[in-house]
Amino acid sequence: MGLVFIISDLIGSEKVKWEKRDFLLSQLKGILNKANEGYSEDFVIQFQIIRGVDEFGAVLGGWSNTFR
Image (tube, rainbow, N blue to C red; front, side, top):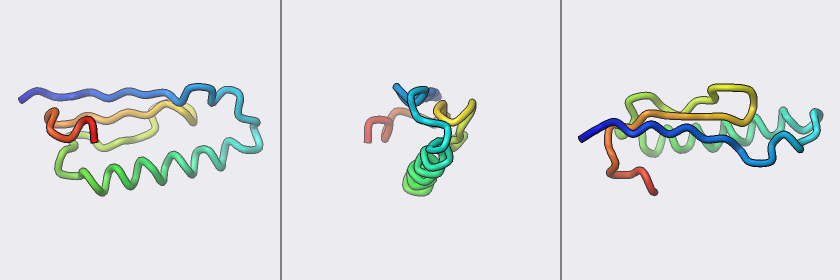
């Protein structure tokens, strides 16, 4: 069993107006928190925002729930 690194970027987020970035960030944090809670046993490093508002990543301990 190997590690699975997930790095993702929200496509088109650069088009979001500055006044809506806080809303985007709060929505993304909520989604990532749900994933972290629901699959906590799978994570080596839980989902977190790694750059700016729209880039996030995680490290999983294997492939078992990667595509859920």
